[in-house]
Length: 316
Image 1: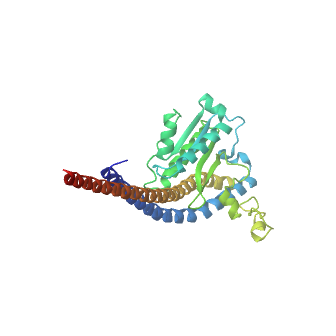
Image 2 (image 1 turned 180 degrees about the vertical axis):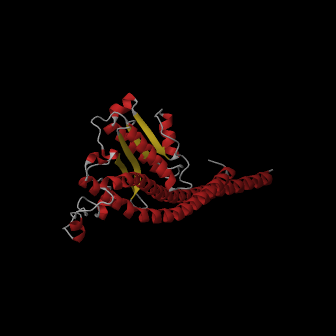
Image 3 (image 1 turned 120 degrees about the horizontal axis):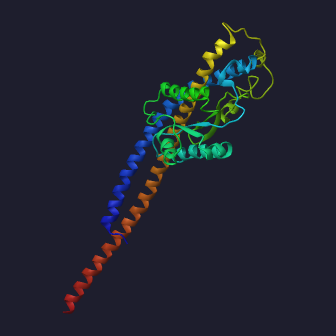
């Protein structure tokens, strides 16, 4: 059995750990509120921008913009992965990495074996993971979540756009954790370039049911649905609008993925720290019980020794 000093040291150490995890939970909860506000503000614009881009694609020639061009053969691929810069968030980072690996295995196995697959890792954890496995990495996008800004998303998206335009990449895919609620996230593998013919709907989009092909995912036609069939007049031209709108759409999709991931990270960290605090309290309860038993045993032993000594003196 451990000594009383050892048990006291363990109790003190776990109490310090509990204080740290409790403080980290409070910090994560505060960051989560801000992250939720940002993603809830960004989603409507991102979803509507997706819908407008889809409509323009239907109304114009696919060859009107190079980012619509589907390559006959997908030889070179870029996977954009969004993870966190830090750990202590449960399975948050490992889930995103596993989704990227399953995407590579299911869709890009041949490109991976040939060495024609590159990674653009936004976040330290994803960057370190694929760097250790000798994947070609596009740029350095680590340490970006301490001061999250649209400029980072623009740089990442422009790198993907430039690579797709120049022919270095025939396809670009975006992998991230979508914020569902505080307790869980959706692991998303989303086509980014070329822009897909059919709108890609995440579970959150499907649940909201407001951004399907005809304006709504389900339900009867209404005024909004009817407006999708209206003929639009483009000024100065559809091609001119596409030159501005399509790159903006790609940049904003990367930005939305970063905001989704940031909110999901804070939710995962808050839950992980709450569980860690609860586990520390359970362990403290067990240790205090063990300490009391050990102390009782020590007192009993001392009483027996004193009684035995007194008896020995009387007999002598």
